[in-house]
Image (cartoon, rainbow, N blue to C red):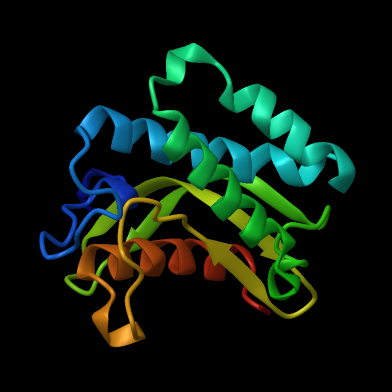
Length: 170
């Protein structure tokens, strides 16, 4: 059987009805903001709690980010709020893994095989459950699961399919 070209789930066309959280700034700053948040969410949980803010401020002070101080401060506050939220404690514990590459071959509903390749922002595997998190840093959060954009649903579905093959009991 023919295998179709590789699909990168996070590279799908995004829902053009979503809006940026940061109005009136250029795309470069929005892109840098997303990268900064991803990096902070990746490595801050590995540090002792009491050293996180100082380390984050040092990281964020780098001039090459080209992001205004006002936005840097907002990033720090938002990131700390998420990392300190008790309901996310397992997700940012030493049991979770950041920036996990994932790939495999899946058969679509049309019967064709496709190569899927992506990167999971945060993965938590427990006895009978798997939690996959993909940060969306530049969009208003949807108010309900029904309002999540189709590209994001396809992305998470692809990850779920690949993980279900690897962990059929979860």
